[in-house]
Image 1: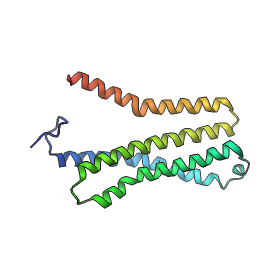
Image 2: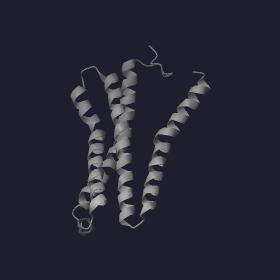
Image 3: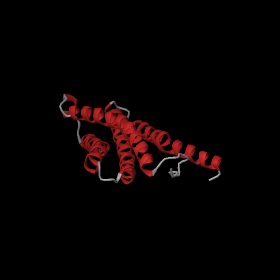
Image 4: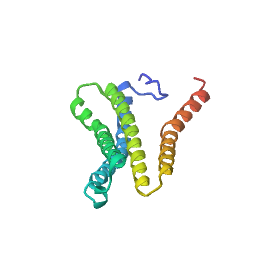
Length: 162
C-alpha cells in the first residue's frame, strides 16, 4: 500500500475516508453550538427588553444574528457537500474543501460569540469594560483554537526533523 505521507500505510482514498470521519465528528460539536446559539439569538427579538435596544446595540444585534446565520450555514455545508459529491470519486478534494469551510465556520462562530458577549455586557451596564472582556474572549479563542494547535504541530515537526 502506498503511504499517504502521514506516517500511516493507507491509500489516498483510505486517508480521505479517515479524515472525513474525523471531520464529521468535529463538525457535530461546532454545528450543535452554532445552532443552539442561533436559536437563542432569534428568540431575543421577541422579548420586551429587545424593544428598548437602540442605536449601536440594535445594530450589533443584527450583526450577531447575521454572523450566527452564516456560521450555522457554513458549519452545515459539509452535509450538502457530501450529499452532492458522494459517489463521484472526489473525496480527497471534498475533505480539503470542507476542512476549509469548517475553519471558516469556527471563525464566524467565534465572532458571533464575541459580539454576543459584547452586547450582553453592554446591556448589563459594563460600558468600556464590555469591549475589553469581549476582546479578551476572542483572543482566548484565537489562542485555544489556532495558536496552540499550530504550536503543537510545529513542535512535533521539529521533533520529527522535518
